[in-house]
Image (cartoon, rainbow, N blue to C red):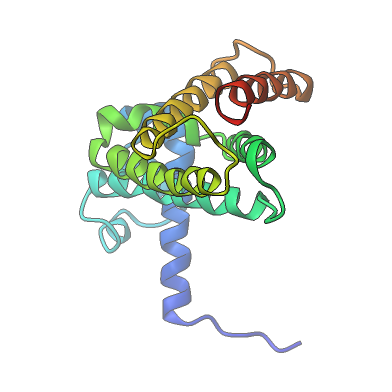
Length: 202
């Protein structure tokens, strides 16, 4: 079998990905405060000097970490949304996908929740990116007549309300106010669906 030789670009991307993955795992376990460069490079199995070929310093990596994960989250949610889904069914699937991503990426919630203090630029980039995508989706639903009772200038406020609910619902999961069983998560999602149905799609 012919073995394809990796290019320098391929190897460079692999190293960058290894550093990101190591940072996610380290921050997930120890928080930003405990995620030193030494710990990250040891987990990534690269030399410390190599780290500085990719990032100016530790803060540079932290500032890229959440936006990188946030983009993966948005991409994942998009892959889970069938184009045939509209209105409430689409919103429910969006939240299900969000929880699914959190389950598959256990470090994400700690990285998100601590970023406002340890990586504020990254936090605000993430919120802006998430808000803008969510707003466009809600706006399209309103234009199709699936959402009623809100003026155009109120939809942005509605989006932040939805983001706030989602954030605190994931705290139920992250901090074990509920079990991580499918039954418990289904209850959370169905309650969210009931509330949003009455507030937006009724």
